[in-house]
Amino acid sequence: MKTILKIVVLALLSITLLQGAAFEKVAKSRTTNVTISSEKPIISGSNKIILSLSNKKYHDAKVTVKAFMPAMPGMPYMESKNATEKLGNGKYEVNIHFPMAGTWQLHIFITPKEGRKIRVKSSVNI
Image (cartoon, rainbow, N blue to C red; front, side, top):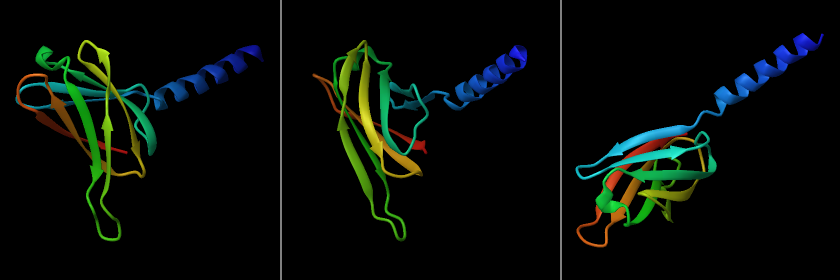
């Protein structure tokens, strides 16, 4: 009986871990790649997202994120702009709230201390 209980518990844990897979996506621009990741799957509601910049030139830049969903019939345009928090080594953390499921466009604005501001485009499906 104890063996069956252990098997059932292990099966439930395995299923839970499979459904809780992390999110990761790479957005590319001419000057840098941005790895967009989350410890949990992206959901409707609040999400903590980590941005990792590949180009060391931007490791001390100001980074902001605009998440938006274009207007569609019967639904207005939705937008959220968020500033990031520097974590060091080109990593930034941002909290983004997605009010509903669907495809959300992400525009990541990177403003270095010197040089031109760049925009990296990506999207997430919820």
